[in-house]
Image (cartoon, rainbow, N blue to C red):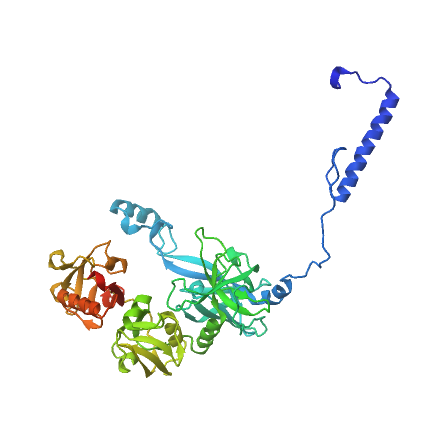
Length: 509
């Protein structure tokens, strides 16, 4: 029934004709609406206009031409690693040694402990994925060291889907670069390193294998240069905002000329996924490392044999420098080029071969970039006077972690210096502290020494350039600095991390 309970008309022929016309009209509207890409609208509504377009060609300002040229040179890298495995439950840190004897015997009886049997294998095969790119037609591939580190098998898959076995020619953990080689072909598509450093704001393209999705292209800009992310002293990264995720490691970052300007190596991500902050090793560094790996399989770096730290504003003031620049020598290792050239702890190295240093990291990079046996000239500042020292570089030793133990100081053996927030004792009176210097036995967390990073167990070797062995000598050195109208004094400390310099305000001594 219609509204108001009006009965249907009895005129059958007329009703049929009207119904047919009505259905035909609805059908026509539906067809015309579909053809025009519009939805059916009520009679009282205004039909939508067609989508607005421009006269610009669809391919203009596109990255497609660059991607088409470079993507065939980018590969997916798949590795296999054998790892010891004593865990019953993968990833839980539940080792067999942690089990009660009865439970361990149960697992041994029912599952065994031989490799490849039961639930307790001695080794497990782990697979990982990353990215890389050809740098020559004969099969040399660049990737990250951490992608292929400790691998037993390496395979690369090209953009056309072909898979090849690759061998590791050499790797450099310090810069996280590795060089691979694929044998059997001399016609691989390859790309070259850029010769011009990118500027902040330049467009970049990242191509790689995120989450195993090979041939993925993302775009962004260079966000910053010279980033130090705390990886090591050679940090000098490009920061980009092109999307980079797990699996992009080792892949290239291109400029719009199709040149490699960096190798993607790390991201900042609280969630583990892309947040728009990624880091790439600059091409100028990669090309130098790759050339050495290709030639010898290793990277030999120059070495002078000093432990250095940054020159802060307060340290510069205490050394009589006009501005905080260069590198402060905290310790000189024996029988090294620096020791033979007469460099001493407390010297500030200001320039290498006439080029001024901005900071301590730049000194490390400048020296490491040169080959052992090269001769360099260092501009040194000592006691407010500058001089030039010439030395021949040695070879940087392999990475070793020196095991240092903090001397355990006795609380009742110290002499208090409350205004500095320190308690001190002669090193020779504290077991394990050695014969030289004064041990910090306690530090007030709210005192000026704590603010500058002085910790209990540190050994004060020098104050204001003078060796100290008692708390009284520390006081005298502070008093001498006050008489010279200095606001801070330089302390040379030995601690868990090695030898370093800190400054303390002399007015508080």
